Length: 86
Image 1 (cartoon, rainbow, N blue to C red):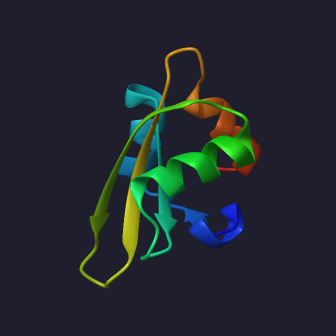
Image 2 (tube, helix red, strand yellow):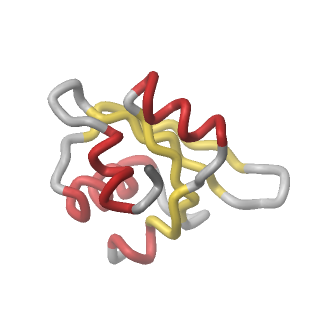
């Protein structure tokens, strides 16, 4: 799958913005069929950063949410600025 088909859009809520600042994590809505490895590879390819960990969950409305934690040498706030979140 192509990275743009895996990572659909960033989630911008108060809780998601707090995660960017406090936990170095970015929250994305992703393709329901994508696994953690595909999400990690797509994010690293698109944004040129290294991902430490990916957690996923299915929301009540059937969308898949990915919590992407970046390695310490990269800042989630820098990626958020590129995306126009911050």
